[in-house]
Amino acid sequence: MPNISPIIVALDFPESGAALQLADVLDPQKCRVKVGKELFTSAGPAVVEALQAKGFEVFLDLKFHDIPNTTASAVRAAAELGVWMVNVHAGGGRRMMEACREILERRPGGRPLLTAVTILTSLEQEDLQEVGIDIEPMVQVQRLARLTQDCGLDGVVCSAREAKALRGALGDDFLLVTPGIRPADSSADDQKRIVTPAQALENGSSHLVIGRPITRAHDPAQALDEIIASLG
Ligand SMILES: O=c1ccn([C@@H]2O[C@H](COP(=O)(O)O)[C@@H](O)[C@H]2O)c(=O)[nH]1
Image 1 (cartoon, rainbow, N blue to C red):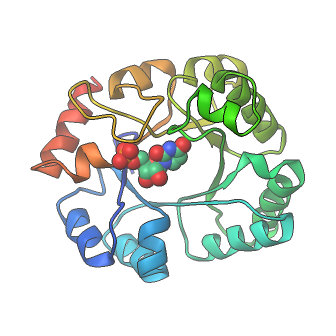
Image 2 (image 1 turned 60 degrees about the horizontal axis):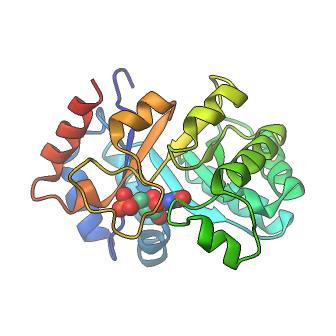
C-alpha cells in the first residue's frame, strides 16, 4: 500500500451497518481501520471480512488478557481472520506474550502484527495509584514496553506522550501505536493522555489511532483529510 497514512480509524459503532457506512466514505489507500470490542461483539468476524472486502487492512483491537493458552488461541483465531494487527495486554506477562508470538510463528503463511497494550490512554497517575501502581504512567509504560520487546512482539499501544522516550530506548523498528490523538480543537472525551496528530508523529509514533474526531465529524472523509494534511 504505497503512501498510506499512519492513521487507523477506530470504527466504534454498535452494529455493522453504521461501521460499513462510515467505511464507505473512507479510502483504504489513505487509512487503516480498527475493529474494537463493541463492534466485534455485536457484528463478529463478518464485519472484519466485509471491511477487508472493501480493501481495508484491519486492526482487531480486542486487547486479549487471559492465561497463556487462552490468549494464544485467541490470537491464532484472529490470524485466521487475516487481520493486519492484533493485540493483547502487556499486563498478561511474559509467558502469555511469548505464547502468543510462538503460536503465530508456528502458523504457516502470513501472520498479523502483534502488539501489546501498556497503560490505557484513558488513565492518569491517580487512576494507577488506585489500582496499586505507585509510579508515573511513563515509568510503567517504559517497563511494559521493554518487556514486550523482550518477548519478541512487534510493538506496543501507548500514548504518544511516551513515544519519544520509547523510540529512543527501543529503536526505529518497534511499532508505537498511539490512541488518545486529538486535533487541537477537539474534545478530549474520556481520554487523559492526549496528543495532537502532528506532535504524535514528531514524538515517534508509527501509527495514530483516531476514532471520534473522525467518526463523529460532520464530514468524516474531510476530517481525515485535514488530519493527514496537518501531518505535513
Ligand atoms: O490505550 C488505549 C488503547 C486503545 N484505545 C482505543 O482507541 C480508540 C480511541 O478512540 P477515540 O474515539 O479517538 O478516543 C478506541 O477504540 C479505544 O478503544 C484507546 O483509546 N486507548
